[in-house]
Image (cartoon, rainbow, N blue to C red):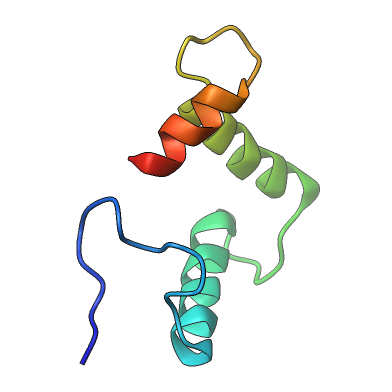
Length: 75
């Protein structure tokens, strides 16, 4: 039986079945719903996007180049 492992192979597109994808969506929703009201506000969504953007923007120039996106994906 396949199980996700830590490392660069984790969560590549097409690796999760529908059940696992649904569970992951619930986890991601719960993390994003910081006020616990079972809904995502615009502010909660933009906060998550900002955190992701900041992680991808390796040189911190407030832009994401293709190379930064590729390097982030390969981590």
